[in-house]
Length: 134
Image 1 (cartoon, helix red, strand yellow):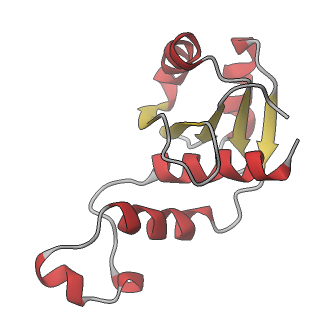
Image 2 (cartoon, rainbow, N blue to C red):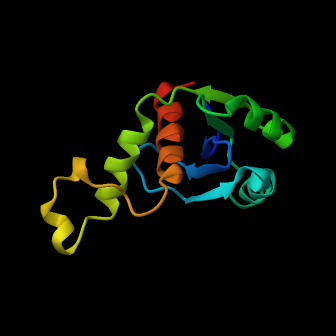
């Protein structure tokens, strides 16, 4: 098991979601979306600020390239299953940001978030890793 929080990363070709998660189900300590080309710099800042014990990297799109980009971080990188992460991230987004106005009458399954939710996917990837007990 990783000592300290976990850095979850949802890898993408153009952008990556990231989240620092200390405990599954708890609010993330930090989260955001970064251009893939700027991810190493952002990870360096997160390492200095939060001292995570491991990186949970989603096994999806561009995962191998992002793993190579993060190899110099000094942290163990755990490739983590991200099956159905996008759908679960949408549910989590709307739990944190309930629809307002006329949108609150639309079934949530029919709503799309007004912004990318790669950061929410990163939270779920980190939580999946934490719950795995590795």
